[in-house]
Image (cartoon, rainbow, N blue to C red; front, side, top):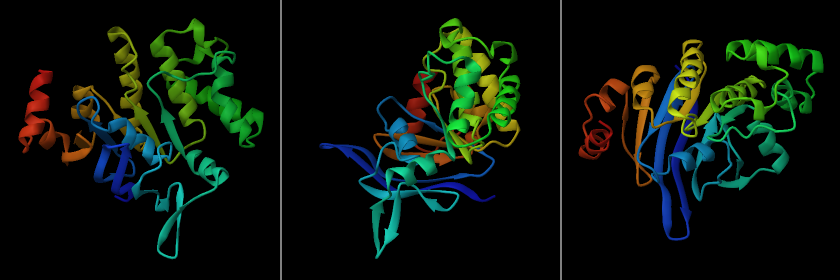
Length: 252
C-alpha cells in the first residue's frame, strides 16, 4: 500500500524546549494511523506540522509524494508562498478539538463554505454537503446553527466540513477531548465508518480502545520522540518498550 504521509527527521523547538525530536513515520493510504502518548508529548504539534500549521525547524513532510509547505531548490528547502500553502492545505482535512465552526452560518453553510470559496458551483457543493450530513447522521440539522447543537453534533459537522473538499487525508486532533463522555461514542462511530470506507486518517487520540480496534498503525510518542510504533496488537497489547507499558498501565 502506498504512503499517503511521510515524515522524515521532524524537529520543532519552542525556545530551549524541543517538542519534536527527529520524528520519522509513514501513514499509508487508506489506513488509519493513531498517534497516542501523554499530554505534552508533541502529538498535536506533529499533526499540525503535517499541513504546515507548524513549520518545522528541520526535516520535512510529504503528502502523496509532494513536499508540504516547502520546495527543494539547490539542495535546500525554501518556504512556499502562502497561496501555494493554502492550495496544499485544501487537500488535507483537519478536525480540531473545539469544532471551530462559524457561529453565524448554518450547518449547511458551514459545510459548503470552503468548496464555494474554491470555485465549486453552489448546487454541486450543496448536493455534496447533503450527502456528507447523511453520512455523519445530521441530515435533519442542515438549517440549524452551531449554538443549537450538542458538542457531539458540532464535531460531526466539523467532520463533514473537513470532508467537503474530498481531501487526500483527514487529520483529527483529539476529536473527542472536548466532549462530554456520553457524546464521545457518536463521534467515534463516524470515525469507524470513515475507516471502514477506506478514508486515510491520522488521529491524535486518548481513546485507546478506538486506536486498538480501528487503527491499522499506532505511533506512541513521548517527549517528542517516537518510542514505539507498529500494529495496534503489538503496540497496545504487547508493547516492547518499558515506557509504552508504563503509559498504558496508567490508563487501566
